[in-house]
Length: 631
Image (cartoon, rainbow, N blue to C red; front, side, top):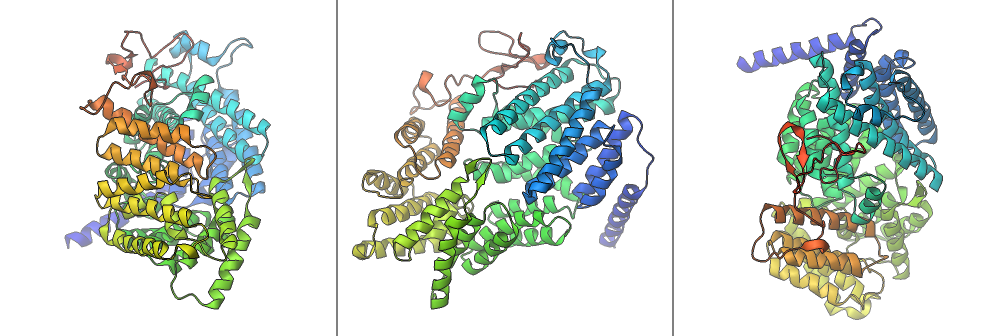
């Protein structure tokens, strides 16, 4: 009875929320009503009612900055998912209009002035609520416009234009952070919406920039960008607490995406899954059929190693809506890997084929994945072998360029497809190699029942290679690849000494490797990560320096540099927590330079160890570990 009553109450609440959303409210006339109307549109969007959300905002985009921003954001999401040039152009026009609307409501400044200088005067109360919200919306529009610039054209000019827009956006967010810290708000509601927007912008920038490899980071710092990972996470967490504000759910989405996707693709798979799960629960309570939140729910289960539950969630996300089929592609991608983790290569191949037909992102990658999974199937027929030859031949033809650059994973796929032809129709464990390059072993390694079959396959392949050396055209390359995979498996089995020996043997053979020159640097970084787990911190530094300085021009180099940078961040954090007997003074050549942390004190002001105020400098920047924002 209690269960039935609870269900009825839940149904009534959901029906009530839907009824409120369907009420045709009058045209919003002031800032509060505009924000409220856009908040309703956001709820519609998160409930998979994408067209309704867009239609609700469109009538007001010529004069309301929030409606213009919301409409432009939906157009941007649609453009990114379809990668259709007509959608990209429509999104650009929408965002251009949004910038015009925001500019009309921003504080008017002289030709030789700047908003940053106006804000630094301390006249925070002179700005109206409309003017400070216009700055926030302007920054978000600039960021979207810059991202669209990157995918619209392939030339250097577009990159310069996009970079300048992001730089201006970055500066406006810093000014908004000052406003938030120093302004007295008459309306608590206004402050909440503004604060969640500032937290989202400041947090996202710090987190995004902090993840970039050292070479890129130094260039960005030279032109005024900087980032602090911990500050970024903290700001986003603060923003997500304000769940019922306009940008509160967006802060939660960014954090969940970081902990469940970004840290696994670009980092060390050290995302806080418990935090992601905690943030996800209120989202699922308010949007139980939201396709995006169901996707993240599947991703959480996948990372925990609950593959069957993850598959159920991804399939539920697909079934939850049919309006934007592009959302399905996210789930197809994960379903592909889930079945591969289980060793069901035919199902993995099925989803790779669906992606190849429907997704515009990288048909060369999908085609190679399809071929790699097919190669892992036993008892291949003559038809399947002919199909393999066809698929591998298609991969180079399908290679494309995005923003003027080749996709690194496509280069890898093309390279391997050509190797397949040169080696008379064979590759060694290509699907396991793909799982490794996408950091899938960090998920497989959480479950021994998933890891053991792979370990058996790897051991069998090594024995076959050693017993039939003459049948392998590139014996050392194949042997070292399987040795790297064996070392990774042993690491996740807790066999650290054996794993270390595998990685060292790969490095010892680096001069004999003919084609797969990415294997030694990857093995070197695996050694660094292994030492990090064992708290052999000085060895971590040594291997990271070797990986960075001794190897150049290999496949998937940029991807490895992300992992190197993530390992350095973890190293710095461990050193800050307290050195042990194996840690020496890292000094100027340490992975992060001077890793002495800045010290936060009262009133949101930061100081370095010299006592200088790091929050508000003469040029309007913030020096909290080089990061923007006010803690």
